[in-house]
Image (cartoon, rainbow, N blue to C red; front, side, top):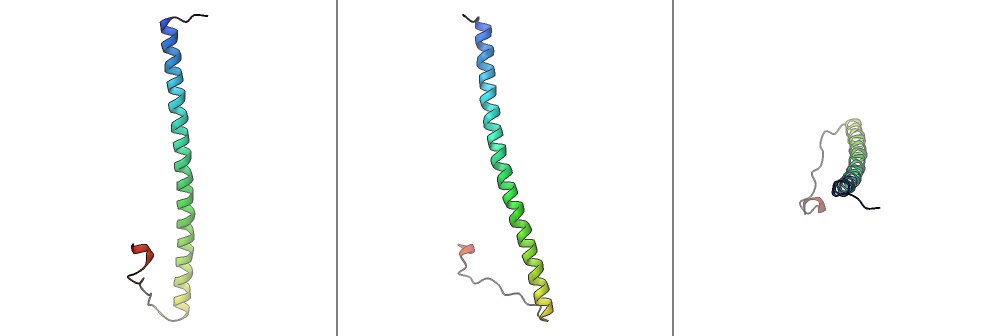
Length: 75
């Protein structure tokens, strides 16, 4: 079955929109995964920070040691 130029253009537009929707959905899924991972790490760090503060207050110490200058986090 032959398509008119208008139908061909319509089909191309639909195909392009479908591709762009798929790409956008894939990107949103990727970003949601990263956001979920960040939320989990943040929650764990908050919990660890709370436990460390509780531990140091029980020991009667208010000092927290600084990371050494050669820390891998500073590189």
